[in-house]
Structure formats: structure tokens, C-alpha cells
Image (cartoon, rainbow, N blue to C red; front, side, top):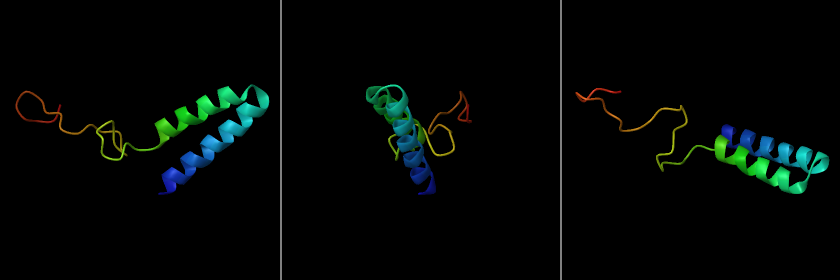
Length: 64
């Protein structure tokens, strides 16, 4: 929960900074990229909170 709040705050800060310095479109793109990188996938298999992969096994059933 704390990670989500930090991610949202960083995305808002990046939007405000880039929208005021460069362009609102650049700020929106940066905020979306930060949100995609910062929020865990929620069980869809794109990654996990700790960066590991799920269900990948090596040739003999061991983790690769």
C-alpha cells in the first residue's frame, strides 16, 4: 500500500515538473510510464513485487 502511494506521488510530481518545464503531453507520458513501472501487476503475471518470475522451471523441474 505504501508503494502505491509513493508511486502516485512520484508520478504526480513528475507530471507537474515536466508539464511546467517542457510540455503537458511529455508530463502525461512520463506519469503513465512511472505508474506502469511502479505498480505491481496484481496477479496478471507481468512481474511481482520482488521482481521474480512465476512458474518457470528448468530442464529437471528445478528453478531456472
